[in-house]
Every structure is written in structure tokens, then in C-alpha cells.
Length: 361
Image (cartoon, rainbow, N blue to C red; front, side, top):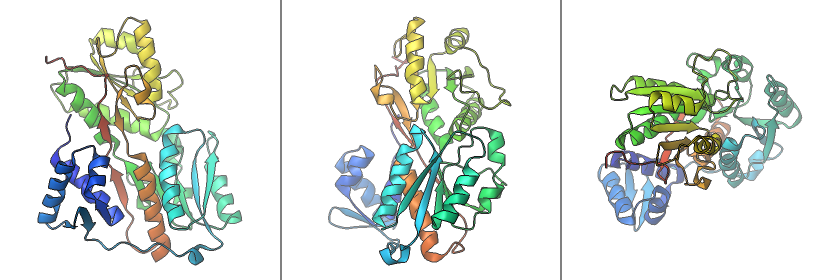
């Protein structure tokens, strides 16, 4: 599904405002469009007064924040706290680390074990022993109950930015800064792509042991319920160990059983690591991707390595990390009470590959 010009221009505006100045050729490469298309978008944004045009460049109207001097940060660090062995967050960490190091800020990475309640002592020790002046954190929140226990994090007395985690509405963390992928929009991209190809019976195979998984499942249910032209839809677990939340009410049948029972021809799979396994399991059951069904993976960590390469929703994970780091730097520069908390949503993209088939032809 082609991206609308409005969405593309919004992305251009975000890139230009984040970097101050970007060459049109660089914009074209990042957005995957022709230089002519990027130039026309820049011209339109300039015409409506949102950016300034230069010779082959687009310039922001928003003054850039000067980076902190190395002397300011002497003796202090910014702590990065993320769950260990969490492949999805690797690119988020990379984006944050690069942004902090470019600002001459020392970074201390602290992976946390997959044990409930372990993050609190880790953060306490980081603040006490390393004089950390700011905290970037992706809480594990493996179950919904863990997410309820967030008061301790809200009470941390240094600037905190949540990475790839959206605080619950009305929770103690609702007034903290956060930068997160808009997973509702990601699921919307996947559903709309499948429907544009004529698929009306859809299944989501998703995990249930992370905030991303729960957001994806909730979005899928909302989107399908709101579209009367979706004739059938169902949700199953994408992996045997993916049901960490005992309160889940979603089905736990085998994917192949549900697909045959519902006559499903379109499948969304989270995560894409699980997607590669599920595609193989379906092949063993006699169902071939792109012939018998179309699949869209969610995460795009390894989806391109599938056979065939899997169409995938690709969260802008590096951008999430970079924006989170820049938001934290702004708090550290101007003081934690320098303005209202910001909740930044970053739109993912759809990478169309060889795992979807058009039923309309």
C-alpha cells in the first residue's frame, strides 16, 4: 500500500526539525522515494511555511538546541536500562547511544534479567553508585500486573524518559516523558494492506508477554471490529510460551486449525522471529505462503530473511531511541521542570516484500 503524500510530508517535516537541515537526496533515500517526489514535497512544505528551502536542502524553522559541552557532563552519566536479550530493543538502544555520544555524554548500559521486580534495585544502584544524571528505560512489563507497579519509577528524582513504552492513561507515569512507536498505526497498515489485496478473513498470531504484544493485539481487535467488511477475524498465540498474562481472554488454538476453521487467507504475525517459525509450521501442514495465504510480520528484525522475504511492519526503532535521548538531553540542559511532559508517537512503516498475494486479480 502506497504511503499518502500527507504522511510522507509529515515524516519529512519530523526529520528536518530533528536535524535542522537535510539534503533532498538524503530525504529521498530515507523515505524510499524518487528525488523528484522528495523535492516536490519539500517545495509544498516550504510553500505552506513549515520549512525553508535552500539549494538542494530543506531547513527547519525551529532553532536547533546546541549540544551540551563535555565539561557540563563531567562526572555524570546517562543510564540505559533495558531487558536483557531483547532483540527488538537493540536498535532503540543504538539510536539512543549514538545521540548521547554525539552530545559527549557518557552512557552506561544496564541490561536487566527477566525477573519480576528486578528493575527497581538496578535503577536504585545506578543512581547511587554511578551518579547517573538521567535515565532512559524500557521497563520489561512482561505482564499487565507488572505495569501496574510503576509508582517507584515515577518517583525517581532525575529526568526519566520511557523508551518504546507507553504509560497507562491516568497512571503514575502518565506525567513522565515517553517516546513510543504508534503500534495501532502499525496494525492499521498491516490490516489495510491485506484488505487492499482482497483478504477479508484475517488472523493475528501474536505474543502476550510484552507491552508491544498487548498493544498489537488490542489494536487488531479494535480495527477489525470497526470494519464491517472484515468478514472473520481471530487472535491466537504465536508461540507456546507467549501467554505470560494469565488474564488473557484470547484464543489459544493452533494457527493452522484456526485458519482452516475460519477460511483465513490473511495473517499478521508478531513477532517476526515467531513468524519465520510459524511459516515453516504452516508449510509442514500443507499451507504455502503467498499461494494459500498472505502474511505480514510485525517487528521487521529478521522478516527480510524469510523464504520468501516477509512483508513486515517496521517500527522506526532507531528513531525512537534517538528522540528519547534528545528529549532527555533537553531536560538535562534546561532542568526537569522546563516544560510539560511529552508523549511522542513515532509512526512505523510497511515494507512490502514477497509474502502477500493479490486476490483481486
